Image 1 (cartoon, rainbow, N blue to C red):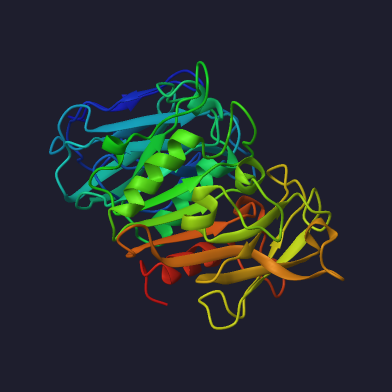
Image 2: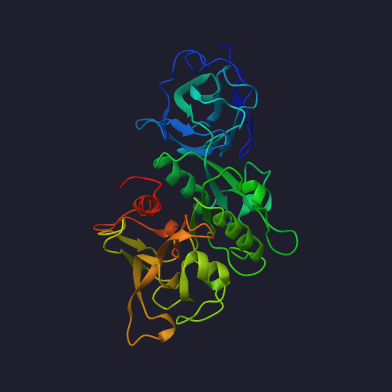
Length: 394
């Protein structure tokens, strides 16, 4: 065949591709016993980028193929050794699906390449080509701060991803935003203090997610991280999008009426006051409504109770200059006369010492947004946030 393919023989094992030639993919005639498709059908990633590829296996209907299928990724020899890494779970596949996590080394040159996903079972083989476009250097950093399995061991390529870990790379890829990923290590002692200022150098946009994390030592945005983000935003022309259903819980120092004294919440997120875990959002299905006159207008998002994440919500009493982007009907701390629409997604422009940075905060679990009749998707919510921040056109 003339290519050195990544063969992953044990469930959960992964490794690095070692170059080779693309050819026609596979080792001859395609088997008729089984087939498969891949989603996405093509990859577009920056150097250093990663993305999951879902393999859907068709084992036939009349007499379904019952054998285990081992998957490999073939890499063209125009990419240097270790230029592409891959980890497949499960492998071999004994059911109807498996997932390949593909990573592009920072050394890979921009250009168009053709990878090949090969599934073999004994003498049988089936191949699907997977086009890869490596874009220019990414200006967006995705910060994984949910303290899940991969945060506990950042070298473990086979760590089981959370719903958050799966969702955000796909949201960025769908909007064609090149990105690199920084996984915040689980703190051995104390609380997290990374990414450092040096880690943020060269990035103009940060997408930060926290999943279900909260409290010490798993604080969503620790004091050290707050100081690093404030300094980064102070540099000007930077954009921060935070998706965290528990950040207010962790950071707030005052009540709904304020004034908030936590510098990050008050001066960068733009909170006069805030509240967390109200009855209308805590472990319950609830609706979020986009605000008129914003990119979220005419959209409604349904947050499903505790699926896939344990769900709650944090709401913001916006300070002057802070835009309400989406609301939930809530009576924060029973301060209002009755439940009313309050901000659960806010945005603030002219942020930082230079007054040219932007911040968007979503206090809801976007991972739990399910599109039902008349409602909108997590992708539409994410796109609206990008539009507000000036990163995408409407």
